[in-house]
Length: 448
Picture 1: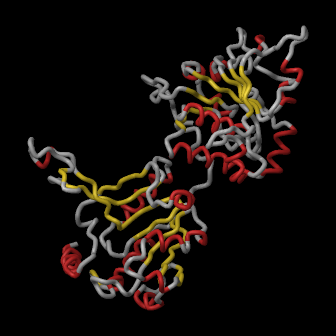
Picture 2: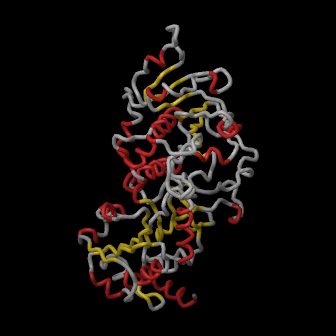
Picture 3: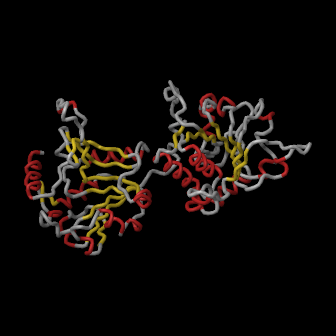
């Protein structure tokens, strides 16, 4: 685990609520004093343990629990568990009703005076919670932790979380994957059965769901490194689309710059990146294979000639093949940008591997007085300053995009929620769209 002292210097809660899970990652640092600063502390299942309050904190406003039978052997309602009077205002449960044990004490009075809410009960509103949406991913085995996170997001809009690694960080003495919580040393029978029944991929999908919410700005990690190395490295597939009947530059994709056809240059550069597992050349014309150097790895995928029309869009082409591509991320390289550097592609991919960004695209800045829709875009005509002092406009290069297949299917966009904008100079961003662009590209190629 990376050092956290610097991260917590001058730290303050930046969400209204935090959801605390039960992962062993809670023991990596004294998170308790930070957890207890949140206005609303939501805790899942068995959330306290004597002697561990430095790690977990003591404050609890909402308790989320799996089911009634668990309450019979553990509940934070009992004051003795937290050494002080319980502060619980609400209980969120998977079940619709509370059992008799929980509802009344020995004298017949209610043990809990607060509000109860079922996370699986259908609510009369446009956005339903719990199983109604998570079931699309997890079937009938929706974990309580994710139900709690989703309900908290619905309630508070944006939340902080800690202790939600879904057992993926846990190894026993022999290095085998095991299911333990922060309060346990050995895997119990119930956790062992769940591990065997559900399989590791199910737990990895839980983390992927959380990562999606992080990318969308709905979740913040109290420990920014908590999810590091829990999932296998993402897979990447190169994606090139070309056609022969280009309008302004005939046979543009096989035109030569620096003695190499544009299609060959693109395939060759993607071949230099070993973590790109496969490269797809998606076209209707087998002729392109005669312009690609022998020995380069790629798969030729024939497409319908109807997709060669001048008005067919990027999305319309991708939609015809996206369901057949088995990868996490696509690396789309436009052959009309022959000067993109291999190092640039690697840098953009690394941002995604490191989970700093969920997508990436190449761009350049326009450092000048710009107009759009008959209005000044980045300056005030009544107070014209120097060009080097104005805010530059960012222009997509259209030559390189790296994006999640899963998120494209959901949002139909090659730019995610948190893109890395890789800025490059005019030469690297040069795009061939006209005969003049091709002539200049050949001059630039000779100078390189």
